[in-house]
Image 1 (cartoon, rainbow, N blue to C red):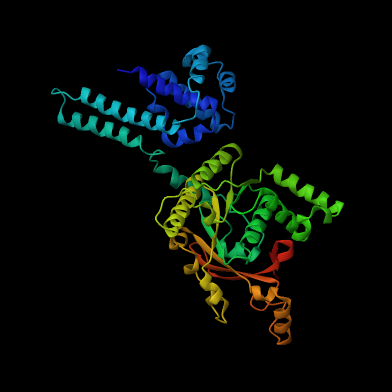
Image 2: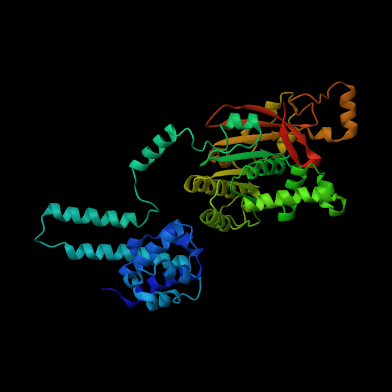
Length: 443
């Protein structure tokens, strides 16, 4: 027996989606069309999902226009409009979805009880029980159990030489050692403060954006203006200090910045300052739904601990890194995560750069290392930023501007690949232009 509460629940879920299409993200994660008991509601949800897959805006007017030929099958214009006005608030939407799932499970089990009787053979009883349990289990998973598709997709990838082969960062040797930045991977860059994590991530993001990749830059430290200033400084070879002071920029440089910003906008490059990790993940999924998505940069993980459960910073950082690894795999995107190195790195006096920092030096979290497919430590000899120290070292013959070692070249930053599930480990020397917030290949 269908209760009035169940009817209202189904109407409010559909009405909520009509009034706020962002709620469809949460609905898709939790419910399927077969969970609606009313046939017209099931059809409505199927059509909403179809519109989403086709990239169409979801609201009542578009829905009626898109399916005007079949409105009678789903209750008619009047009923669809009535359903669309059933939810006046987004509050408790997830609770409503969970109730729908529970109602479906309960109804399946009640239906099973009615089917079982003394006239059925044992085999038939077992069949009914197994089918019902399969339906109940199906309600708790987000996707179908599909054995064939992964094999088909793998063979398609194997033979399709013209297909995507990851995203190039423009830093050639790094790309070669990482086999490019691939979908489904969590790639972690870490260093001590001031070494160049943000400069590195923004340089890679800039290079990829100019190649047309769809990118989200998650900035927990800098405003949108600061992010664009650093990217503009790099792209236009303007000192970052000058670009922060607009009056120091020549008009022709402003025109070049205008070109850059227009290009970033046309490629849907998106900067978000959301630091609640669950809200951020919802925002990322919404962007992907509306624009498509290739790669995200998270700058940096410690800024996202607010609201995360855990008794220590280590537990919280582990929870966050796990969420981002799951996001990379489930959404088929690449996630680049920035992390901090322990202070102990500053006290390491080894003459060998590779001994100065290891993957265990990631601050407060071994889980970040475990979750990451690739871990890259960044190193610069920050003492060489001091002119007096640099001159002293130069007199002693310990400064070499052609060296690929950051210990003796002030214009070098080393990227040390410490963990690589998909390729080789090693060190890459890159050209460092700190005042321009720029990193280039070193030949």
